[in-house]
Image 1 (tube, rainbow, N blue to C red):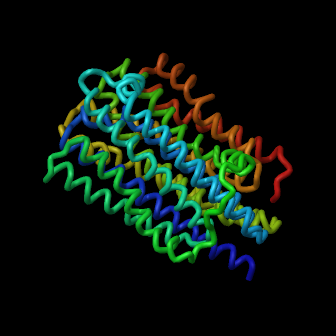
Image 2 (image 1 turned 90 degrees about the vertical axis):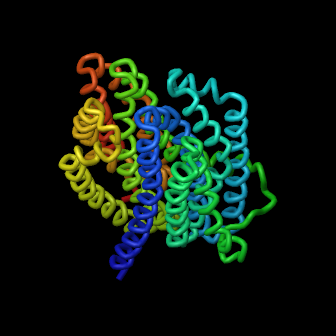
Length: 436
């Protein structure tokens, strides 16, 4: 019976979270599609130049939400309700404080940020508009991530999924309305994206207002021990998102030097598809995190091991399926976003996809193992994996391979770096005295 229960819980949490993450990433797909339709290659380039900032905002919100959610789940499993509420309170305070810094940076320094991210004169205004509005909505992005993580760790994955899906669907609808009938251009795209987390929080609000939830604010604000625990447990989530930002920033700089804005536009197509792929693995990791943290808090070693093994098997199956779909449909996927029928853009995107997404066979394992480490309070190992993925290996690999193989080297850098990190993760996993 215990085995049946662990399988049922795994299936429920993982399915709901993968579905929610796919829905979340789909609004980026449609955002990019509408921008490519209306604003062509320059719009795609502007979107891709500004998007690393979104990864950082989203990553910091997830760091606080997931880090807080892990400690909350462990405390609740031990019936330490006061400590659990202190974690929630400090997650909210920390999230609002950091989000306000992003608002200020967008209001006063957006032009400098846009130049730093690599926008040239032809796309400066579009990129600046996108980034400035994005940062103004930072508090909404932060609080939505925090609330969804706590709801999920409060044993309510269905509500978390519903909030994310409804927000994403609303964003797609508003995207179309703002960009086409209302002709609001790039501003309409990011304005719709900014409204999505507000709509998601409106779905969650009745659950919180009715006090049906297990987490509540208390007076223990700025508890530095709690803040340190939140940051250390959630750092892997920030570094996972920072990986996307780092890859995008590094690749944008390299590609601009090799093939200009057309190359960056082709990378924008690959980036959008990559966000969906990463979302699937993120959904898997967010599905297993509450379960592993809960069982770990109860010292249930057997079920921790089972959940991890199920996750590894599922990520292998997903990797085979995802890469097969991308490889055999690369031409169709590229054409979907290539509304100007640019031959060079199409060629870059198709050849790039077939090389770039070989990384699928390693990304899932890296994310799952990183989640396992952080969910069992082995944060340092998780951070080593995440930091290696985001900075230590990908940047020098991209610089070296692009010098030797030009665009082919750029595309190959991602799978090569993920493979190296995968080897590191395997060594870290088997060298430690695992709880399984």
